[in-house]
Length: 463
Image (cartoon, rainbow, N blue to C red; front, side, top):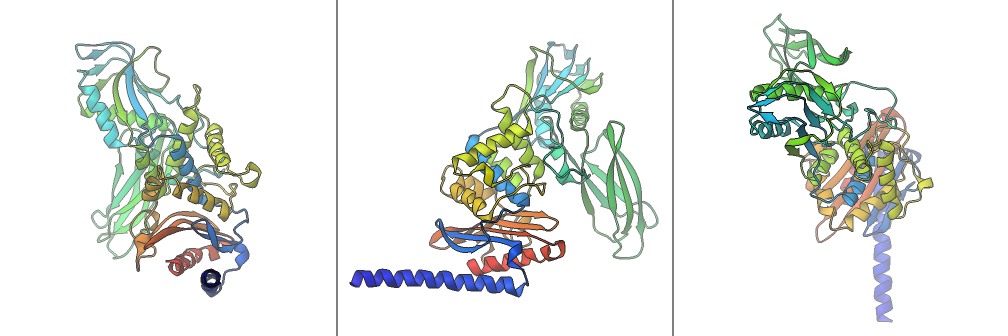
């Protein structure tokens, strides 16, 4: 009887805690004037449900989709997986001269940036090459030629989050535009980084004497097979530097023109043109630049919700199992196979785009919690996935949120589209396992602006 009484007491305490928590969370929702029909909320403690508001409702997840993509990528690829960018040539180098074409073979590396290209060119320089008496080919045949996944939103924009995807990509296929004030009455100082002949700059800015003025805008337009960056507006003479990020439109020429410039800086002359073309058969490898480790690339995707990295990784999933150029639909199929393996039914969700840059994806809060729980229970991948998530009040897309209290106890992925807001991940607890939570909002744009602070307040109730 004594044992039964103890069990009854403990059970009642658990129910009391769950009821009290549910009441507190619902009071937060009421305080922020949210209709529960617009929400999908779910919280688990060691696999046990402790809070549920419409958690079985299918909703648009936005970038919470990257949780699913990241889990599948970590499940398929080993942690030390690297993607290699190579320089090849069919002809031999003789007395510093290559009488033929040099070829850049893209390996689908999402982390191929200036430092990696510099490494590649330095390795090439050690072969003794001084002159390429031919063209520079850019071979992107690891992937197909679909630069913009059909699963994305149909309208293209020039912002960095909508960058094209190619097996030969450089600096996330985006350019940084830095604007600083010049002399009063003159144009502002505009810097493109990285800079080369692929980009044309049109500076239509003005530096004004009035303090506090900042109306700088930038756009990217096609200029033949190149891009033109147009910067306009005004900036105060005492104003701070402004930075704007824009995507580019032609990845093959973008990376090729940069490589040409890097070769020039290392004393290697290219006499021919840059062109998109496969490497010649039986070409020999002259230099190799390996990517970051997979876990570091995954962190790039999760911390800053990088759509480009998500789609590059998905196409690499397809490329691993095919001799043909990788198609996004095959990468999505690999992700769906992962979901099959953890108990998903394909009729119960919709996955059209792996980064979440669409309103066609559909998941429930409970489904995303299942993915998070599956990751949490797999020690081989959980530490790497957790370290890749934004830390509240510290970094990534949560850097400026939940700054008060033990903010580092919250590691979560954010999601956002107009009228769609998401937050999902883990809440650490002292002397206990982390809670798994998924918060989703689908509704009106204006109320969506208030969803973030409401979600943050819900988190504070769970710590």
